[in-house]
Length: 267
Image (cartoon, rainbow, N blue to C red):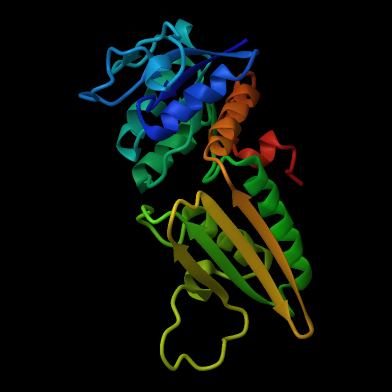
C-alpha cells in the first residue's frame, strides 16, 4: 500500500488526484496539503473532492516522514523549493506536476535528485507520453522530407499558448531532427509570410469551448502525410497518470525520472 501526500489538494487538479487515489486498492491518501490561507484548510479532503469523508484533513503544514511515502505536488512553482527541501529532509519521493521553475529551483531539484527519487513531467497522461515516443520515431524517419506542423486545441479559459504539451512535443521533434526549437519554431503566420522555410516546426493554436486538450502533429510530404493525434476527453487522465507515477516511484533509488521511465519507454 503506497501512502500518498497530495500538495495542492484544494485545487481543481488536487481534487482530481484525491479521486484518482480513491479509485485504487493499493494506494491511500495519507496527507493533504494546501497553501496558507486557502479556504479549504481544516476541511476533510474527501468531502472537498466530492467524495465521502477520507478522514484526512487539508492542512498548511508539511507532513512528517512517517505520514507518507510519496508526495505529489500540484501547487505552484513558488512552493516547490520548500517542498523539495522537505522531501530531502524526510528522505521521501516526489512527483512534480507544477511548471514555471526558475533556474535556482531547477538547480535545487537536480541536486535533490542525487539523494531522493524525483519525477517530473510536463504532462502525466499515459497516452500523451506514448505519443511523444511515436513522434520521436516519426520525426527521425521523416524529418528530412516532411514539413512538420503542431496543432493544439484547448478550452477558452486557458491563458498560455502554445500549450506546455505542444512545446514539449516541439522539443521532441526538434531534437529528433537536429533542430533548435527557439531558432526553428514558427508560432504565428499573418500577412505576406513568403514560402514556408524548410526545416521549421510550425505551431497553430485553437481556443474555445470546453476542450480538455487535443494535439495533432502533421508530417506533410508530397503525395502523402502522416498525422499523429492525442485527444484527452477527461481531465482525470492526468490525475491517474500522476498517481501511477507516484506508485512507480515509491521504491525507486535516488534519481531524476520522467514518464518514459514509468511506462518503460526509455531506449
